[in-house]
Length: 494
Image 1: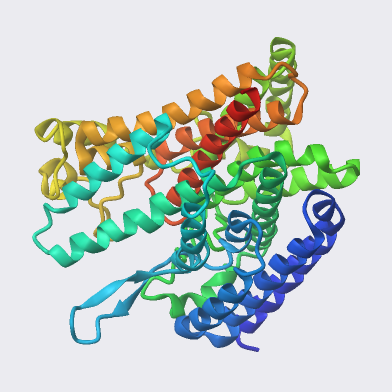
Image 2: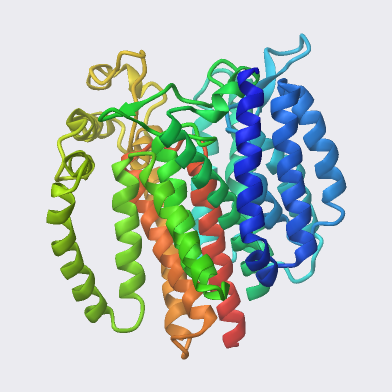
């Protein structure tokens, strides 16, 4: 049996089990017809990718059904999230038909942006109650960042390439942020969107657990249709264990996605009435966080938990209980079978792949030297600096495993300031909204705590990873949720 068929069978069995298990709880939170319709398109796109085994066949199927579904979809962000992780985001060039080398790069994620978010964007613009872009603090910071980045693209002597980059800014950054920040205006819309996101992440978590257990990357079977790299990293071991990837392209991106899933699930689990189902859902996400064996997301998860506790009731008592439990559990882990291996994987404590930590430290040191030469607006050829050349790895690349460093190298300290200001203003808006809610046990307050904690965890994790694969899509999207939340609470208070 061909590998792609075997992979497809496993994926369909696992997804069917998850959707069946979650059906009752999901349909109590969102509309049942919406759940079934999104689930069916998830299956359809997955089958089209594996059976068609050609990106353009897949794209034709996807576009056809997305055009039909858009007429019936009441919540475009929910549909976008539900099927965002069906395939890796590896781009394929659209041929230029002899006019130019290629028009632009298309991927599964960009397909969804163009045929779900773009129609939603045009629909939002026609509404009379839409807050125009630039009215909020985060809007202003993002507008500054986008304008500066677009202007800096003009340093590229190839005007066609510069135009492509501006187009990517619009569809990859502006569209997810704007559509999500303007679509989610009430709690039912938030619940519908977040349950779709959690379900999509849970499917990935279960498939990642299978990859880890069997030592088999399920989506490598469709990598050929996705271009030279296929969006799937090579088999990467850590301490003799395979690091799961699924459709995220990199293990650390998978761990990052699991942290977001955990943050959102903290809110969603309130509406799951069966205690066993609620606990199983949390276990699925925790296992999904473990199997990539990525320490940055583990630290992010810890930060998420600490922040969530700190923004709730009885914070000190809960901190003391957690700290005591951690002190008691860690020594026990080391004496259990396989405990030494587990301890070696832990950040700051373990010794596995210590060279990765050293590389990140050297990257920061060398990058600061390079940034000082072009402190305001960065440089287009920073990679040619001798300090960066010394960072070049065996694959011939310089891995900028720090999103903040990447922004500073590309757009200077002004670009970095606008980038950080955008997220800082988003967090401030959520925090201010939280303080304005009198009932600290309300659904609105719980949602704000979950969004605030998730956004803070994201900002910590991207300190240890570049903005690759799904990472930027998700941090712009979660920020859009934060802005939507702040506006929703503000309108209620008026």
